Structure formats: structure tokens, C-alpha cells
Image (cartoon, rainbow, N blue to C red; front, side):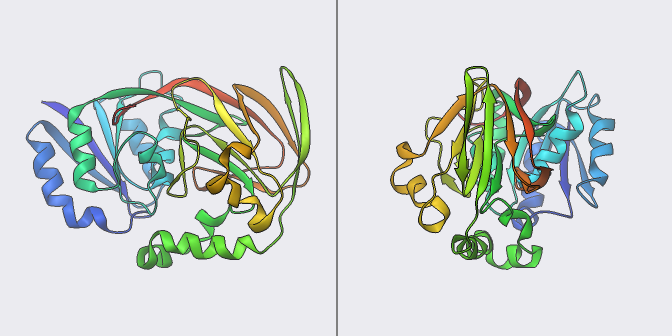
Length: 284
């Protein structure tokens, strides 16, 4: 039987998997030799991921966006990588949506068992990977500012409460973007880079793909609620650049968010790593 690592961490998850754990293990064990590993923290689990990478055909990640990102980080330097699966035990599950994986644990298992393999691009900021999103400015820090206890109780509402506060605090990011075809500069409440379609539980980048070798950079216009409204009511009016590589100069030392985790500060080099990971996901 093929060997499968079921990986999760105590540092993430809102408890959905715990209710389905026995059923999930029973179902997977019919087809695979399953080893379950529960890491005490996101950082501690990375050594285990590297250790097991050559011994398993797949790693089924249970958790949120940050957990999946840490697994990707651990595997990035390896030449041979196992296939990845994902079960959403996080708050929003945007990373799963970008692969066509439902938020439901039971439905996620069914997707994994179908073994529909997809090759997925990764974005890189100063060489640090992100799977579906990088952002700076207003709303960018909401995901890691939200308290774990609040996320367990209120789930996605904990993010929306913080976002409401951010909506009434003025933000301004001065930027200059240099790419092959020239430079563009300006000011924005926030900048968002997407490798896929979903952010914050919403489908923002409707035509976005994560397997086309391109990233979409959204340059938000100033306006009410820090320029958020056009994303929902007039998305075509939000300036968007489709590119493979660029240098983004930022005034100040504001922090970027990578898949909901605090990342690089200030100016960055943006690039893409085409077809960097293999994922069992839904239809494209």
C-alpha cells in the first residue's frame, strides 16, 4: 500500500477535523498506509515534513492557510516533492478554494481520493513563497492580528470585525513598480497580489488561475472604506497588472502578509515559480 502522511498542527484549526478524525482515518486506511503526525507548532513540523518527504507519496495537510504555507516552505528546497492534499480546518480556507477543494472536511477527503493532480505555481517575495496571496496596507494584517480564541468562537467573523475597524482607519502606501515594460507609481490604501481567485472567503479575482505562470497585482484606488467597495461592486475598475516578475518599491517599513502570515517588510522583488507543487484538487 502507498504510504500517506496526515499532517496537522496544534497551532491551527478550529476543531472541525476533530469531529471527523476517526471517520477520515478509517476511510483513508482502506487505500493507504496512513501515518498521522500532530506537530506542536507550525515551525516544529517543518523538520518532520522534510524527513518524511521521500518516504511518502503524498502529504495530506489538515489546517488553515498558514499550515499549508509552512508545509510548502519546508518542501521548497527539495528536488523530489510528494503530492499535497488539503483538508480545511482553518478559519476561511482560501488556499483550499484556490485548488477547488470544498471547506467541508468530508467533501475534502472525497476530492483527495479522486487523485485529480494539478501543478500549481507559487509566488515569491524576496524568495519567500506564497500560495495564493500577498498584500500590504489596509486589511493586510487582519489574519494574524485575530486572536486564536476569537477565531475558534467566531470563525470568519473574527476577521470581519477587525476588517470593519480597519475600514475607518486611513491607510496609504506609496509604491513604485518596475517591470520589463516600464514603471508605474502611485498611492493606494492597500496592494494585493493574487495567485488564484479567492481572498477573505470571497471570489475577488474571477479570471485568476494558479497554473498560468502569471500573478495579478491589484492597485487599490483611494475611496470609502480604504478602497474596498470596488472589489465587490465594480471589480473591473480596480487597476490590475498581470506579470511574472517585478520590483516593488515601498516607502516605509510596512509588513507584507503572505497567505495570512506576517512576511517581508518594505520593498520587495516579486517573481513566480511555475508549476512548483503538485496538489490533488478539484476541477480547474
